[in-house]
Image (tube, helix red, strand yellow):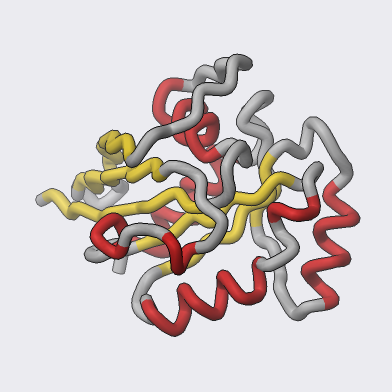
Length: 163
C-alpha cells in the first residue's frame, strides 16, 4: 500500500529551503545560491516498518515576503508545511508569529514544522529567545550545509504524517 503526502517548503528568499530539500533527497549541498523560480517538485519514497510506502511529494517554493502572498494553488492539498527561517538573519523570523497564525487559520488541518536553518553560521540562542518571548517553540534547528538535524526533521515529519 502507498500513502501520498504533499509537503511544502515555505520561507523568505535565501533561507535554505532548496538546500534542505537537496540535503534530504540527495545528501548534497551546493554552495552557490540559485533562487527557485516558481516551484520545484520532488518525490521521496519512504519504506515504513509496517510494509507501507510513503510517497512524500516535496514542493520547494520560491521565497516570499509572507505566506499570504504565496499562490493559493501551491498550498492547496498540502499535508504539511515546513516553514524555514535563517537563524543568522533575524528579519527572516521577525514576523513568524503572524505567519504561523495565518497558516493555522487558513490551513487548520496541515501539520506545521518550524525550522531554523544555517546553524553552522550562527547561534540559535538569539532566535530561540526571541521566538520563545512571542510564545513560539522551535522544534528543529538544522544545517543544510553540514546535514545536522535534517534526518531528524524528516523523521519527525514522517511520524506526524502517518496515522
